[in-house]
Image 1: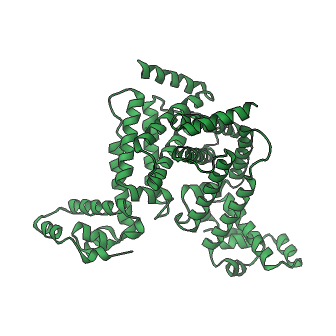
Image 2: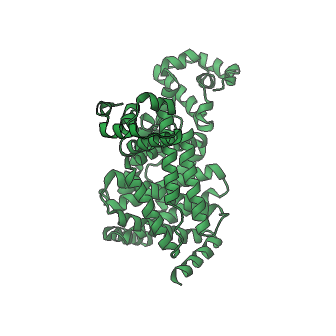
Image 3: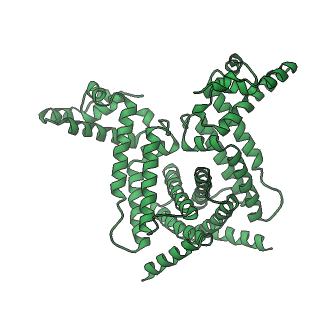
Length: 226
Length: 226
């Protein structure tokens, strides 16, 4: 853990902070926002409590007072990111199915891009044991997105083929996002188009394995062309 | 960690073991095999050093002598499982492309089924920090499989679209395997057929984004029909 930033604690921000009276909740939110900013852009191992304190113009003692330690702070930042993503992916009210999907996918990649380092570290499996709280947050988001897609497809109780197909496609999206962060050798919009094409053909293929999905696919195609 | 099994240490096996003289390597392999058996069928949290000792008919002290602790033993068991999977997925020498893929996928699911608990726990992200040794083993396997698929496709230097497509499909396979272990509500062979159909349509879709992949797809189709 580096704490070089602690030596240069943004004196302007600290002065400004002194003028304001923050409630406990506001102060907590501010520390979380500072932590999320750092966890989004650097590997978690390279973010220290001192860094977060410096970025928020607060003392190290105050950060410990609110969060107890880095793991709690990381989990709090992750919950905050999960809430952001949940808001971002509110289904668009307007548009045909594929257009709505395009919008949501683009917002997802906005999120990935602005939290690049944190997203990468999280999905690579670090820094925490993902079977614990961190795993619950990640799975919570995945399940929420799956439910939203099912709702958008008007298929709230999917059979196994549809469930596997949608989960697989969500894994395609995560994998593509990770690959893009790693290589950055493909235009982001082009990658998003590839992923939209993928879900279309994956649903059509699923329709060959389950007649109800074939009906669903026909209904979506009609809606698309109407 | 439970150590109830330590109370019933398979006296028959222990007696048998006493009659044999094992080399250091053989003894080590035997402990790893016992550990892998346990890690494959129970969540890692529920496997103790005592359990491994009992299963191998060895003393707790001997296990510590060879491995130092549970994490080292887990990593050794994982390496052994990775080596098994690597052997299992040696590309079949015979058959058309789709048939070879079917054989490999079926062998992959044999592996998943026989290591169900360990596979599930590993891909859910536990028990260890996957950015360390465990992550290297998992990524090593993924990279090896990707290279083998690229070799089978005669496309050793893929562009970004092919790379993303194949990585995405590998994520589909892992996701489908996890889903199957969790729900078991789909016939395994049917799921394998769905995954084969998926890679075919994903490659065709990729061909719409990259002309070289379209050529590759046509070549494979010809080979398939020849």
